[in-house]
Length: 112
Image 1 (spheres, rainbow, N blue to C red):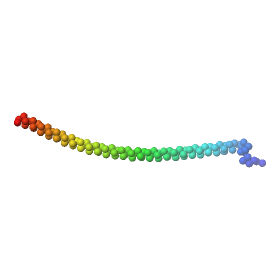
Image 2 (cartoon, rainbow, N blue to C red):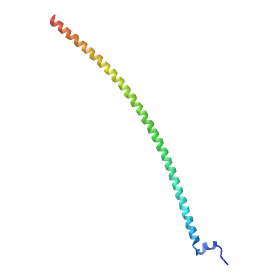
Image 3 (cartoon, helix red, strand yellow):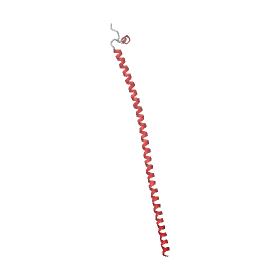
Image 4 (cartoon, one colour):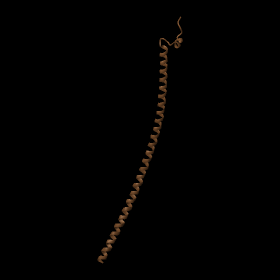
């Protein structure tokens, strides 16, 4: 009479099939746990990637705004510089006119 296979589990299993099956089951469990950790790590990385993309997008928008402000400031500076240059030319012309007038007065007083 043969004994049922189940009884081998409890008798030490002389063929080693139970212990082999047990090791396989433990290995499957370790693999499943490792797969869960990999999936969790991938999800965390995906979240970090999305956050980094949002930050990069925000930084890009901020940079573009700063570039626009700089361009506006340059334009304003150029306009102000042009106005100052025009005023300087005007003052230089007035100075030159006054100098010429003074020189004419001096010449007329000398010949007068």
